[in-house]
Length: 624
Image 1: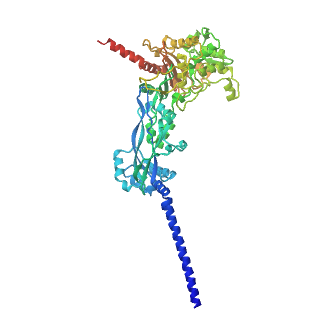
Image 2: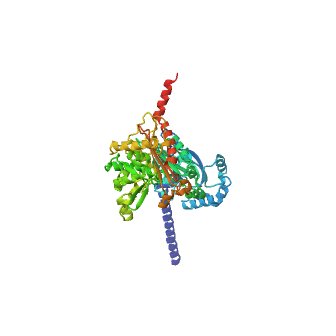
C-alpha cells in the first residue's frame, strides 16, 4: 500500500513537472509570438518591405555640346539595350544561347558577358547588347517567359553630328573603366558612359548631370510589381548644355582643306578674345566607333597607324617652329637694345668658331635690316641677331608669347613644347650653353619645339598686343539678345613701336613682291593679311651636301622631309584673326602651308558676322 502511494506521488510530481514545462514552453512561444507580431511588428514589416523593395538609380540626360551659333555638335538619341541579371537567369550560358536566337551574339560576346557578370554582384544587370533594332526589341519582349533575368532597357546614346570633322575637339564618351570608379554610384550603372577625351572629358562633371532615384517593388522572381513614390525618390538632373567658341562651318572648311595632306593641323583664333574658332587635325577618326565599342582589330589599326589619327596634332604635335620663330627673336633683340634699322650683310653663310651656318638662299641676301630680314626670312641676319641678343633674352621673350608652356586652353592632352635657356641646358645635360648653339635657336631650330596652338597664340599676341589665352567655352550663343560681348585680353608690356616693326615685316612677307609668301597674299581690299613662313628641318644636312647642293624634299623619304609652317593675322588694319598651319613633312612653308592658310583666312574673314551683317544691310538698302 505504501509502495502504491509512493508511486502515485512520483507520477503526480512528474506530471506536474511536465505540465509546468509545457506551460513554460507555451508561455515562451506565446511571448515570442507576441514580441514578433505585436511589439516588433512595425520593425519586421519594414524589413520585409525592404526585402521586396529595390532602390534604382535613374541616369541623367547628358548635356549637349553646341557651337557658337547654337548648332549641336554632340546630342543624345534613344538606345535600346538588352540586359541580364545573373541571379535571376540561373544557367547564364543557357540563357545566352536562347537569347542569341533573337539578338546576334558571337562566342567572344558570350565570354565577355559571362566574365562581366562574374565580376559584379549577382543582382546587378550586365549589358548583353546595345543599339537594338525595333524588331529585336519586340522579339525579346515576346519571348520574355523563356528568358528569365533578361530585360529590355531604354537608355541614351551619344551622337556626334559632325563626325570626323570635330572629333579631336569634342572627343568621345565610352564605358566606365575600373580606373574611373571613384565611389559615385552612377558610375556603376550598366551602360553608363563618361567623357574620355576632348571637351567631353574636360567638362565631364557639368555635362554628366546628377542621377535620380526611384524605388520599385519586386516579387519573388525579381519582376517589378509596382513603382513606389516616397521622400527618397527624386528625378535625375540633366547635365548642362555647353556652348563652344567653335564655328562648326569654319571647322568643316578647315578640316576639308587639310584633308589633301597626309598629316597636318591648323588653328584659327580670335586675336582679341582668345576664342578658338577652328582647330583641325588630320587624319581624323570617327568618334561613333567608341560609342558602339571598338573591336580589337579597329583599336590596333588606329593605335599603330604611323599618321596618328587619334592624336590632336594642333595641341599635342611638337615641331621646330623654324622661321616663324624669327618674330620672337626680333622682339627680344629690340628689347635688348638692338636697333631694327641696323644692317647685317648676308653672304649666304655665317661662322661661329669653326662651325658654319648656312642661309636658305645659297648666294645670300646682301645687306638687310630687320624689316627686310623678316620679309626675305634671311637666316644670316637672325644668326647674328640671336648672338647679339643672347639665348636667355630670347627664351624670356618666347615665354611671354606663350611658348614653352601650356597655353591654358580648356582641353586635355596639350603638350608644352620646349624653349631652352642656359639654366635648362645645365639642368638637363649638366653642361653650359655653348655659343655655337645660339644661331640655330635664332631661326627656330635646335632644341626649340612648339605646338601649332602655341604658334597661333604667339601670332595673336603679335597681332593684337594682348596676352590672349585660347579657350573653347563661351557663356552664351552668338546673337542671343542678352549675350555679353567677349572681353578683350589684357595688353602686353611691349612697346608699341616694337610691335609695329614686326607687324610691318610680316606685312612685307606676303604683300610685297619678293616676300617669301607673296604668292599666298589676299588681294581683296580690307582683307589683306600679314604672315611669316617657316620651314623646319628634321634631318642633319652635312657640309658636303651643302657644297654639292641640298637634296630636294621630293627626293627624300617622307619622314625625312621638312615640316612646312605658316602663321598669319588679318585684316592688317584692324587685326581680328590669327591662323597657324603645320604640314608634317610637307616641304616648304611658303609653297605648301601658305596656300592652306590663304584659303582658311579668306574663309574666316568672309564669315565674320559683322562683315556679313553689314553686307546684308548694304544689299537691302540698294535694292529697288
